[in-house]
Length: 380
Image 1 (cartoon, helix red, strand yellow):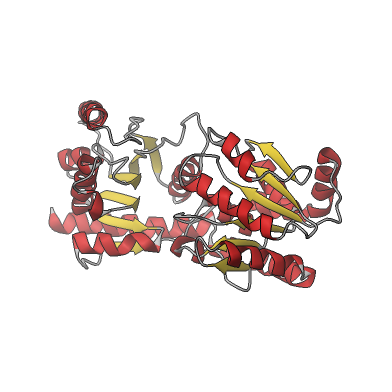
Image 2: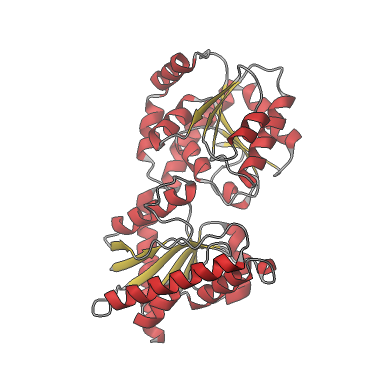
């Protein structure tokens, strides 16, 4: 199939890296792996982070112009299907439904979030657009279980909501895990840290809001186990870095690696002893999946999306979201038990890559798209 792909929050080729961009790229790869032709249909960024209705109106107008331009360019050879990745009230899809309706093609969305409480708020315009898009969608693909209830409340149980586990290309992480000893030695030399001291890894962008809240909770938890030997290695950067550095103010024990590419992150995850991420209000987090795929035992906040990746007690430990004491205790319990860390590493390497790999996702996506085409044909 020829698929028109659109990501309202951040295009796959956006210049600024993020987990959202990573997942958008993975969807494009998975669709192509399934034998489909994929084109980026629009790069209009629909995101408004401040609840500015004037800005939202401007974005909508730009999106509608982009949709009309796409329709005009492809009138004689329209795509077979429109695929939108990640829409929510701050970044709705004003393009996909317009194009799909004009061409009479299936409209499929993945990772849509619908929040009824936003209807009368500053993002009411985006809320309504998401509702319209979800009603128009031929199929809805859920990666985060927490999204499903509200979507079902809007659409009803129509048999066209499908589940897809978060996924990635596990090859790079597995190759890094195979080089654990040399990667650890190299990092120890570069950062001048003791290989025998337990290493804790944290990987996330440094943004205000939920990411900063997670960093602050991590700092509070580490303060409770400050008497233990450990060092923290942090991969990530962003506008909230000064606040993150303040939250993680442990002189001589915290090493900031800055913005890191996938190879560096995989190397960190392979080399560290455990990972720690509170996951405050997190959907599932690509960093969580990347860490587990590299075999890194992870202490994480118990969120629905995180729970479908981390197998509690087997590949990591889940603690109640926002509970500093429980989070600190879980980190401490793993640091006290190297044998358990080693077993979790083996289990994670054996199971996570199989459950969340790109090839399986490509097969499932292909099946869902064929269902969508068949369903669209029935209603035509």
